[in-house]
Amino acid sequence: MDKRTVISFFRDNWRFIAAVLGVVLMTGILLNWRSIYKPSDQPDSRRRAKVCRQITFLMLGIVLLILGLWILVMILK
Image (cartoon, rainbow, N blue to C red; front, side, top):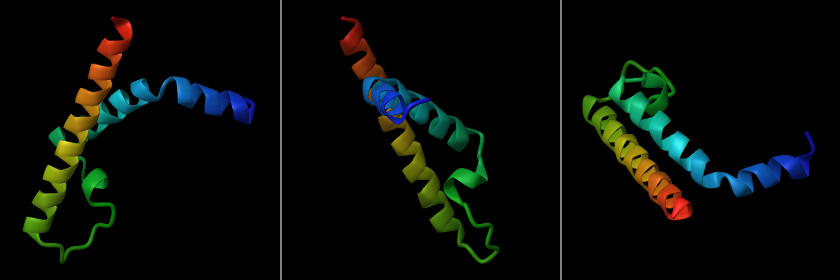
């Protein structure tokens, strides 16, 4: 693939990519994927920090999902 083709694809389909990323983040938080919110597995991390990261990524996933779906609906109108 040509570099321009890839850039053009991402430029044209960024809404769908944002929606998919939102779904992946929400699924990861709901299924407790540790690699999403805790990339380094350190035994001394605190429980409170872990929960804060989970909540942050959950909210990020919700925002990306809602924005992606909203933009998709606006395009299909």
